[in-house]
Image (cartoon, rainbow, N blue to C red):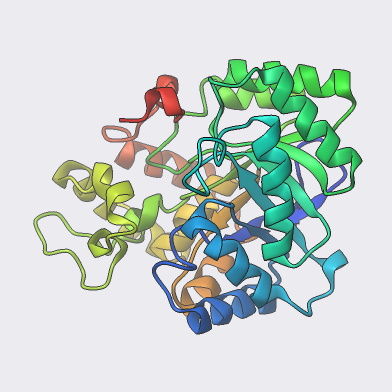
Length: 331
């Protein structure tokens, strides 16, 4: 496993991180989730990403139990706040009330005194940014989080938050966007701004919810037990389940073979070629998926191979920066 700095900070994280969005508490039983976490640890992954809203807190609790007994200083634990965690009007958002209550609940579920990175899970148009950043500053000063980050913020939002963080003297170091060879919306605006500010990307869905593994074929029935057939995961993968996308992805198979990689390894390695990417988050329902994906660590793809991947996917890759996800843009 290779390690990268999180943005311009001194924190080193494993360039492949383990995340439990959708899986823990929903798709897999706890014993299987624990086996995946054990596989991640055995393969050298030290960075684990979750959120308070994943499975309404269950994902954090599962991860906390799976990591119990591990040396805390040898781990980097990330979580997030914003989405609803309960039925009340204040059980959501980036208000001071919700942030201060949510960090305490997250720490309890994760069985830790602090998280290494606390992230705003989306931009909150209903709360003044000053209120949010002051609450984050207090979380940092209380020792409950070491660094602050965001998820799916636009370049303009990242700059505004970063500037306030500088005034408050707290380390705003990361953004967590969706990023893959099929979904490249951060490249035009978010990445250049982040490079300027010293903010690193901790990207999710590097294999496009499984599309880039090649297991979905144009015109073919969806594989039984796949994410596309799961109530929890199918709504996120639908945009990629078109014949033109699947036909383009099939062209990557010989390229992966040429590189001596699986399709999934090729997809993760492609994401890691971007120098602004601090880590790529993988998810898994089986330990063997973890063991396969981590082989992308340290892989360097030649320029001609990168061009061949781009040529294959160019007609179907999404690059529109306005597609950066925020509540105001969600369907």
